[in-house]
Image (cartoon, rainbow, N blue to C red; front, side, top):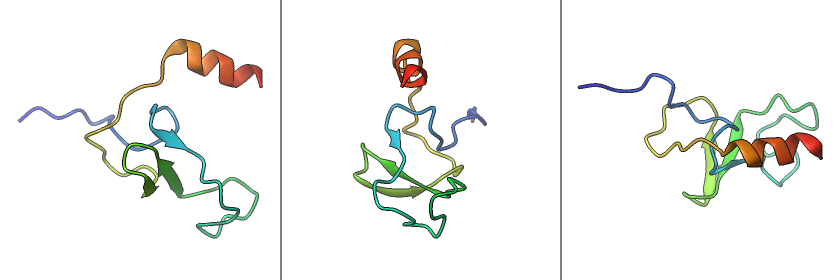
Length: 68
């Protein structure tokens, strides 16, 4: 059984986004959040848990984000 140890939920996934609700996981505005919003699952998920659905964002999307 070969598994990829790097398939953890994080903001490098094309489905991951910062939750829109302020302080939904008790982080307030300091961005030490533990929850991410998964657009594929349409729900909050725990950051850094293993995820079989993780897909990396494209380089173009990462560059566009860094310019904002």
